[in-house]
Amino acid sequence: MPATARVLTSTEKFEGEGVTLHAFVARPEGLKPRPAVVVIQEWWGVNDHIKDIAQRLAKQDYIAIAPDLYSRQGHAVTKDANEAAKLMQNLQSQHALKDLNATTRYLKSLPIVDQQKIVTVGFCMGGTFALMMATHNSDICAAAAFYGQVPPTDSLKYLVAPLLYLHGDDDNWITKAESARLEQGMKQYGRPGEVVNYAGCGHAFFNDTRPEAYRPKEAQDAWQRTLAFFDAHTR
Image 1 (cartoon, rainbow, N blue to C red):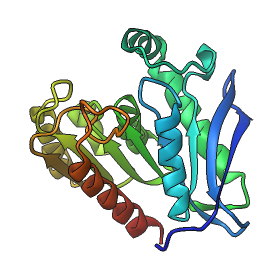
Image 2 (tube, rainbow, N blue to C red):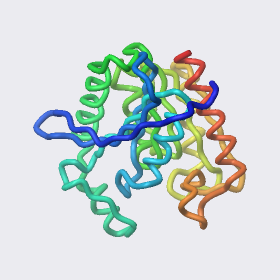
Image 3 (tube, rainbow, N blue to C red):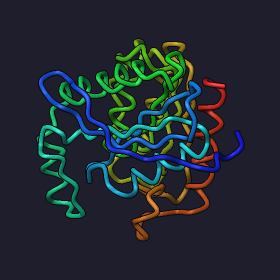
């Protein structure tokens, strides 16, 4: 898709189950219905990197929303790995899934969103939840997960959306054996998806704010694959 000239951004609030959720929204100018992307944060929170990803997607003519999964923890954003680890540890998976489900319901309530064309992308912790969404939320029609934790193999029989999984071979958190297990599980249950492994890349290779981890060539390839994957399921 051609890049959109102007992107509008805002912070929105909407009701979840027992919580008022905050979310960063980036969208193209105009009111015609468009596909939407749920952008799921890393353990750092909805920081500038996640907001930048949302704006990149808006430039590709998507409505992009990054719900704050730390809305129950005071909307925290941190650069400290120890604090991020505590925040992630305190985030209950059932709450995160409820909040992500509330996010897709919110998107479906907006006249500028094409209700049948909602996808998701997540990174690290967010990649884990993107994988979980793909087995739980029938509102989404495709899911891209960057180096997220692979769910139990038998849960893959419940995949409701095609999956793109992007992973670095040298990832010490999510091993190559895990990405292979995901690929084999999708084949075993006949579920559509693709696993892409990048040689020489570790965890967070897509994050251009972390020079020790960022790999520009592979990150660009992963981004183009993600856009092509979403276009195939929404255009």
